[in-house]
Image (cartoon, rainbow over all chains, first blue to last red; front, side, top):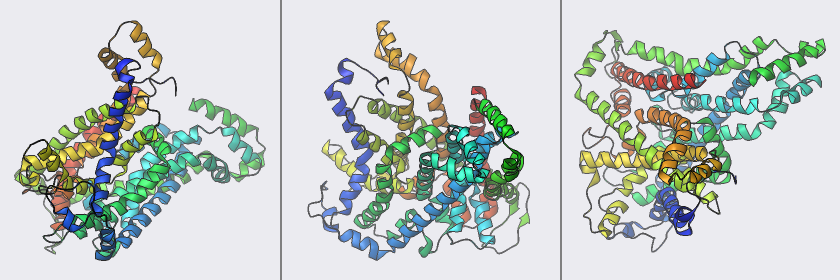
Length: 284
Length: 310
């Protein structure tokens, strides 16, 4: 890391004041919106309608959080989001591990063609399939079910995860696998006992990206699951808006509750996420 | 590199005793088996729906009327050309793409150059680029709707501190559009910054040292060393950003709901409205075909760039 370039290595550009200003800009840009929502969620309705507006909450209260859970079934939205994201992530990983293994290890005739196809699919605008997917889910009686979301979300992350895993698999020496097979493992045994554990960091990174993709998705969730009991978080949060009222403190509290799980994931695994994102060149 | 390893492994496999091979299938059978789940999913969620999309776009199919689908040829497409809302939403989508993609690139480049300074601690910087990326688009839309709130929003408050009279952002089509574009640029620039930052960190310092010796100034170094070396990473990031910009839905939906009127509505929002609210699947399909064609053009450019690289 010492050999990397910095834009400017001498004089003003590496000076302390500049670094302080740069850090401030980056932190304010990245954190301020989330912090502002946190402050709003701690304010009372009365404080919110004072002018000029206050920045820090004067009498911090958790009442908005209690109201966020009692006004709407926020815990159900969270549960739906979590289960849909988790199940689609597992399915994505299983399918992409198998496909990536075939592409990385087996001597395929059409390898180049298949990889090009996967890249083309990775840029596919899922929005355009809203109508046919709606028709299909309706015909299969799958509207208002987790499956209606799990299948499209799996496909949403499948290309990127497969491409990432192909490059991870290619980095694992074949000798290890061959040794396992000589010791009596079948090829699938070698895949799941030797290759996958060695690729665990890569598989895990792909999993985080798939999870965040699914956690964020809005349009399909909005279109396919109208039943409140099956709404995911981004869709459910809309229900807090009354016909005329827009209870910002309560909405803010619900937003904070929705941001925290992914924020924790990002804080813990930040280096891994960055390496995964920049390796794949993923949509964002 | 890959072909080399494949060759070695073939030799090893040939050297294995026969009973090891018996436990395994042939490579071809195994490949088919391993690729089948992915192929089935893609066929069900992408290939069949695409065919179905094209098919339905030639039918009059409205679930509200209860009538069976009726073949109408190009009627849906003809209708589109005389539909002012189609032109308005398409124009908005193109405009959002033309404004926010370069906008995110410029802001992302600035953030990446700042983040590449030699900070003692790296994680706060990294985190401040990751949080906007991980925040759901719909959440970003809601948060910024609150930012731009005319009475109690922080944007008007900051403007007031500088003595500028705040405005009612969501009452005017132009201001609402500007607020939406700013939000999209904020949300997407962090991802650009992460990609560019990763590129910056692979440029060897020695190149800049050599340029220093040659007496090249900072700006020339940036233009002649940094930018050319970053180009591949930037091109890929730009293409993905362009394709997602064409699908813009969440942020305008949450911030303005397309209003005032349909002045900030996007093509994706119009497709959603026709499909889910009006249940007019025929017309919705024709609209989606247009969006599909738009994004396929971008994908074609992308595949071409990748090909020429190989």
